[in-house]
Image (cartoon, rainbow, N blue to C red):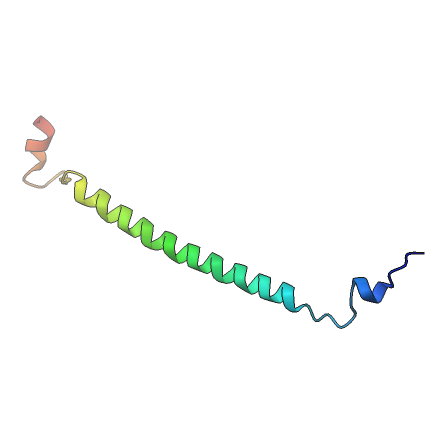
Length: 69
């Protein structure tokens, strides 16, 4: 038999303040990382769209000039 009673190892009250705090902090950190990632992706997409050459459709006026160049 161990010298620590079972109630000292796992309390029956289920009042885990430290665990609740850690989980809530992790959830907030994940939310912040997700929001930051969304804004970074939007910025990267805007930068990419600003640097790429214009696209012409098949029936637009510049389509023949772009196809022959």
